[in-house]
Image (cartoon, rainbow, N blue to C red):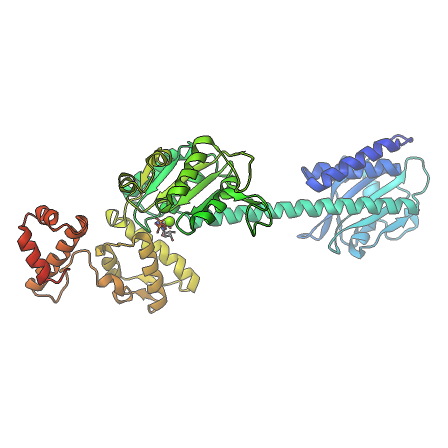
Length: 498
Ligand SMILES: Nc1ncnc2c1ncn2[C@@H]1O[C@H](COP(=O)(O)OP(=O)(O)OP(=O)(O)O)[C@@H](O)[C@H]1O
Ligand SMILES: [Mg+2]
C-alpha cells in the first residue's frame, strides 16, 4: 500500500531518473518497474500493472505489477479482447471505468480469485509506431476517490514513456543479435582451411602469439593467406572485441597514407574541412593490420617508427600528442630481410615490427591442404549458384594435386570459381581447369610426348628455375646444376630461354 500523502519532490526526482534511464536502457525490467511505481505513486493508486502482448500466443501477460496482490496477479494471462486490459489492447484506445461492476467488459475472475476488491480501472495502450504492444492500468485510488480523467492523461504519459523504453530496448537487443550474427558470418568467412602439419604449426604459433601484444610480421608469397592469419591472431587474442583496422600501405601515396594513418585536424590543408580520425586512433585498444608494409616509403617508415617507439602520435596539422594502445600486425610478400640489407627498409623499424615473425608457407609446400581447400571453395561457389550436386571429378583433383600453384590459395579459389561457372554444373572436369593443365608441377609428365620431348621439357623448366633462383646469374646457376657455364649458355640458346 502506498501512503496517502504523495511527496511531489520524490516524483520529480524519479522522473529525472526515468528520463536518463529511458535514453540509456541499462536494465529494461528495472526501468519498467520504476516507471510503473512512479505512476502509481503519482496517482495514489492502490495497484497497477503493465501487460505486454505475446505475439506468439496473442495473449497479454503481466510484465510488472504493483499492489498487495502483485505476486498472485502475475500468474494470469489475458486473451486479446478479454476484460478491460484485453479490450484496450485490441482497440488501441484508452478506457476509464469508474464502476467496473456495471461494465460488461470487466473480467472479474482475476479479482475474485486473488481476492482483490476492484471498483474503478483506468487502462491505456502502449504503442510502438502505431502498433499496440501492451497496456498499462491502474486500479482504484488509495483515498477511495474515483479515478479521474486527469489520471488517465497522466497514465498515458507513463505508457508512452514505457513504450519508448521498450522500443529502445528491443532495438538494442536486435542490434546486438544482428552484430553477433554478422561477427559469426565474418569469422566464418575468414576461417583458415587446411589439415597439413605445416599449416597447423603456423596456426599454433599464431594462436600462441595472439595473447601477447608483440608486434607480429607475417611473411609469405602472394595469396598464401597472410591476411587471414592476421585476422586469426586478432580474434584469438584479448583484443577480439575491439576493432581490427586494416590498411594497405601499397595502395596510397605517402601524403594520403599519412592522412589515413594519423588523421588530420580541421584546416590542416586545403580541403581539410573537418577533423578526420586516422586508422591508428580508430584501432585504439585493438589491432592495426599494416598490409604490404614492404612497400612503405622511407618517409612513412620514419613516422611509423616514431609512433611505435613513443606510443603517441599527432594528427596532421595538430599539436596535441595522442596516446594510443594498438597492437601492430604487418605483412609483406617481399623478402624483407633483403630489403633491409639493401637499404630500402629501415632496420630499426624492421626489428620493431617483427618481434615475432610468422612465415605463411606457399601452397606447394602443403599439398595436403588442396583437397580441403578445393572442397571448401566448391561449397561456397556452388551455394552461390544453387548447384547443390556439383562435385569435383577425380581427374580435376589429380590435376590440382600436381600443379605448383604460383598464385597459392587465391589462385586455387579463382580456379574453382571459374570451373563452377564454366563447367557442366554436375562435375568439375579437368578441362574446366585449363590454366592448370598447361603448367604441370612436373614438366614433361604428360601422356603423348616422346621421351626426348619430355626430357627437353623438363630441362627447360629446370634451367629456368635455376636461373630465376640466381637472379639470372649464369655462372651461379651452372655451378648449382654442376654443369659448365658454356654448356648452360648453349642450352639457353637451344631452348630459347633468353
Ligand atoms: N587456408 C585458407 N583457407 C581458406 N581460404 C584461404 C586460405 N588461405 C587463403 N585463403 C583465401 O585466399 C585468398 C587470399 O588470401 P589472403 O588475402 O589472406 O592472402 P595474402 O597472403 O594476404 O595475399 P596478398 O599477399 O596477395 O595480399 C582470400 O580470398 C582468402 O580468403
Ligand atoms: Mg593480403
